[in-house]
Amino acid sequence: MMEANVHKRFEWVRFYEQYENAGIVCLKCGIFRPTLRMKELE
Image (cartoon, rainbow, N blue to C red; front, top):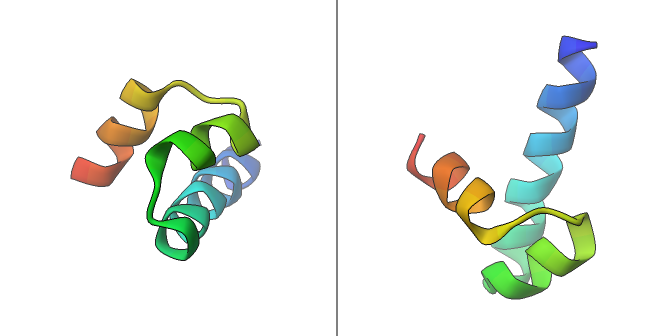
């Protein structure tokens, strides 16, 4: 279960690097912007 969560979060980061737009990544992945911002800072 933990590995699935890590894989999903890594996918968010890859999308962010590809699109360089948090709004698009959040829409594509179904997450909220604060969630992505938290992960960007870690």
